[in-house]
Image 1: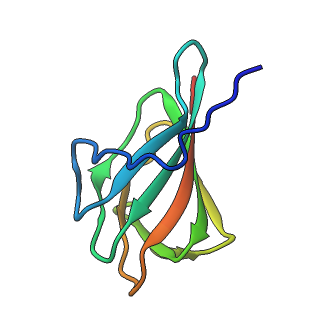
Image 2: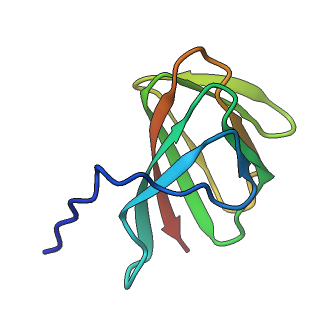
Length: 110
């Protein structure tokens, strides 16, 4: 069993992310094939269009809203909604809402 109690930490802004978005590793990859992160994006915060070759990612909105763009489709998720991106699926994110968004990112390495 492992217990992580770093929920009060600030998090970091990863490369290719902007506008004050932060990511906090809640359950890091270390020694496993998955990770769970909490991301927070103020209005205008997000991540540039990218994809992952070997990862699937699920975004689950806890609070606020987040807009996604795949290059072919654009949609907005609100609290309680989720999306799964498989390896190779492009995605761009931006918080176009008025309030900060908070969401879980669950990443599985294949």
